[in-house]
Image (cartoon, rainbow, N blue to C red):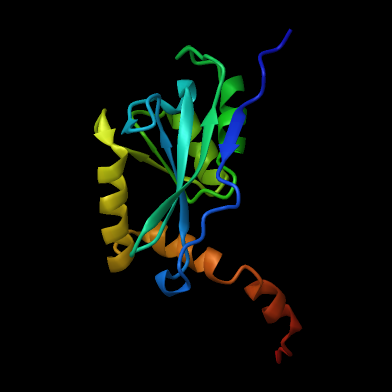
Length: 161
Protein backbone atom coordinates (compact mmCIF):
# COMPACT_ATOMS: atom_id res chain seq x y z
CA UNK A 1 0.00 0.00 0.00
CA UNK A 2 1.45 3.37 -1.00
CA UNK A 3 1.65 6.26 1.49
CA UNK A 4 -1.07 8.89 1.29
CA UNK A 5 -0.57 11.88 -0.99
CA UNK A 6 0.24 15.29 0.44
CA UNK A 7 -2.43 16.84 2.61
CA UNK A 8 -3.32 20.45 1.79
CA UNK A 9 -5.01 22.68 4.37
CA UNK A 10 -5.94 25.94 2.68
CA UNK A 11 -7.53 29.14 3.90
CA UNK A 12 -11.08 29.35 2.50
CA UNK A 13 -11.90 31.72 0.96
CA UNK A 14 -8.35 32.39 -0.24
CA UNK A 15 -6.70 35.35 1.48
CA UNK A 16 -6.87 38.65 -0.36
CA UNK A 17 -4.01 41.07 -0.66
CA UNK A 18 -5.04 44.74 -1.03
CA UNK A 19 -4.94 45.90 -4.65
CA UNK A 20 -2.67 48.78 -3.63
CA UNK A 21 -0.09 46.20 -2.56
CA UNK A 22 0.60 45.08 -6.11
CA UNK A 23 1.04 41.52 -7.24
CA UNK A 24 1.62 39.03 -4.45
CA UNK A 25 4.29 36.36 -4.59
CA UNK A 26 3.24 32.92 -3.43
CA UNK A 27 6.15 31.64 -1.31
CA UNK A 28 6.64 28.36 0.57
CA UNK A 29 8.72 27.59 3.65
CA UNK A 30 9.98 24.05 4.41
CA UNK A 31 8.93 23.60 8.02
CA UNK A 32 8.10 21.02 10.61
CA UNK A 33 6.78 23.39 13.28
CA UNK A 34 5.14 25.98 10.95
CA UNK A 35 7.20 28.75 12.62
CA UNK A 36 10.78 28.14 11.42
CA UNK A 37 12.56 27.10 8.23
CA UNK A 38 13.88 23.85 9.68
CA UNK A 39 13.58 21.23 6.94
CA UNK A 40 15.63 19.82 4.05
CA UNK A 41 13.60 20.11 0.83
CA UNK A 42 13.66 16.40 -0.09
CA UNK A 43 12.58 15.20 3.33
CA UNK A 44 10.41 18.16 4.37
CA UNK A 45 7.49 17.23 6.60
CA UNK A 46 5.57 20.11 5.09
CA UNK A 47 5.40 23.61 3.69
CA UNK A 48 3.73 26.74 5.00
CA UNK A 49 2.67 28.87 2.05
CA UNK A 50 2.16 32.64 2.20
CA UNK A 51 1.16 35.40 -0.19
CA UNK A 52 3.71 38.19 0.21
CA UNK A 53 3.81 41.76 -1.12
CA UNK A 54 5.96 44.75 -0.23
CA UNK A 55 3.27 45.99 2.13
CA UNK A 56 1.94 42.82 3.71
CA UNK A 57 1.49 39.09 3.75
CA UNK A 58 -1.18 36.48 4.40
CA UNK A 59 -1.06 32.79 5.25
CA UNK A 60 -2.49 30.79 2.34
CA UNK A 61 -1.97 27.09 2.95
CA UNK A 62 -0.20 24.34 4.88
CA UNK A 63 0.97 21.21 3.08
CA UNK A 64 1.91 18.04 4.99
CA UNK A 65 3.72 14.98 3.63
CA UNK A 66 4.18 11.44 4.85
CA UNK A 67 7.57 10.78 6.46
CA UNK A 68 10.56 10.76 4.08
CA UNK A 69 14.21 9.97 4.63
CA UNK A 70 17.22 11.93 3.38
CA UNK A 71 18.24 8.89 1.35
CA UNK A 72 18.93 10.17 -2.15
CA UNK A 73 15.70 8.61 -3.44
CA UNK A 74 14.35 11.24 -5.83
CA UNK A 75 10.86 9.75 -6.22
CA UNK A 76 9.69 11.88 -3.29
CA UNK A 77 10.75 15.11 -5.03
CA UNK A 78 7.90 15.01 -7.56
CA UNK A 79 5.25 15.21 -4.82
CA UNK A 80 7.01 18.12 -3.12
CA UNK A 81 7.54 20.02 -6.37
CA UNK A 82 3.90 19.48 -7.38
CA UNK A 83 2.82 20.93 -4.01
CA UNK A 84 4.66 24.15 -4.91
CA UNK A 85 2.58 24.84 -8.01
CA UNK A 86 2.09 28.59 -8.30
CA UNK A 87 4.91 29.37 -5.84
CA UNK A 88 7.68 31.73 -6.88
CA UNK A 89 10.11 30.44 -4.25
CA UNK A 90 10.69 27.92 -1.50
CA UNK A 91 12.83 28.67 1.56
CA UNK A 92 14.72 25.60 2.79
CA UNK A 93 17.38 24.61 5.32
CA UNK A 94 19.10 22.50 2.65
CA UNK A 95 18.45 21.28 -0.90
CA UNK A 96 20.27 18.91 -3.23
CA UNK A 97 21.56 19.82 -6.69
CA UNK A 98 19.06 17.58 -8.49
CA UNK A 99 16.18 19.15 -6.57
CA UNK A 100 17.52 22.63 -7.40
CA UNK A 101 17.47 21.82 -11.11
CA UNK A 102 13.94 20.41 -10.92
CA UNK A 103 12.66 23.36 -8.88
CA UNK A 104 14.12 25.89 -11.30
CA UNK A 105 12.61 23.98 -14.24
CA UNK A 106 9.23 24.24 -12.48
CA UNK A 107 9.70 28.02 -12.06
CA UNK A 108 10.35 27.85 -8.30
CA UNK A 109 13.42 29.61 -6.88
CA UNK A 110 15.00 27.57 -4.05
CA UNK A 111 16.43 29.76 -1.27
CA UNK A 112 18.73 28.14 1.28
CA UNK A 113 18.68 29.93 4.64
CA UNK A 114 20.23 29.47 8.07
CA UNK A 115 18.69 26.49 9.90
CA UNK A 116 15.92 27.57 12.24
CA UNK A 117 15.31 30.96 10.62
CA UNK A 118 11.92 32.21 11.87
CA UNK A 119 9.43 32.35 8.99
CA UNK A 120 8.34 35.81 10.22
CA UNK A 121 11.93 37.07 9.76
CA UNK A 122 12.15 35.54 6.28
CA UNK A 123 8.89 37.22 5.29
CA UNK A 124 10.06 40.60 6.67
CA UNK A 125 13.24 40.34 4.60
CA UNK A 126 11.31 39.26 1.51
CA UNK A 127 8.92 42.21 1.83
CA UNK A 128 11.93 44.57 1.81
CA UNK A 129 13.39 42.80 -1.24
CA UNK A 130 10.07 43.04 -3.07
CA UNK A 131 9.86 46.77 -2.31
CA UNK A 132 13.40 47.32 -3.57
CA UNK A 133 13.05 44.82 -6.46
CA UNK A 134 16.60 43.83 -5.51
CA UNK A 135 16.67 40.13 -6.44
CA UNK A 136 16.51 39.05 -10.10
CA UNK A 137 14.22 36.11 -9.26
CA UNK A 138 11.71 38.53 -7.70
CA UNK A 139 11.75 40.76 -10.77
CA UNK A 140 11.18 37.71 -13.02
CA UNK A 141 8.44 36.30 -10.82
CA UNK A 142 6.53 39.56 -10.57
CA UNK A 143 6.85 40.20 -14.31
CA UNK A 144 5.38 36.78 -15.12
CA UNK A 145 2.58 37.12 -12.57
CA UNK A 146 1.79 40.70 -13.53
CA UNK A 147 0.21 39.89 -16.87
CA UNK A 148 -0.02 36.20 -17.76
CA UNK A 149 -2.00 37.04 -20.91
CA UNK A 150 0.76 39.24 -22.34
CA UNK A 151 1.73 36.57 -24.88
CA UNK A 152 -1.83 36.36 -26.19
CA UNK A 153 -1.85 40.14 -26.67
CA UNK A 154 1.45 39.99 -28.54
CA UNK A 155 0.19 37.30 -30.93
CA UNK A 156 -2.92 39.38 -31.67
CA UNK A 157 -0.79 42.36 -32.73
CA UNK A 158 0.09 42.90 -36.35
CA UNK A 159 3.76 42.37 -37.05
CA UNK A 160 5.70 43.82 -39.94
CA UNK A 161 8.80 42.00 -41.12
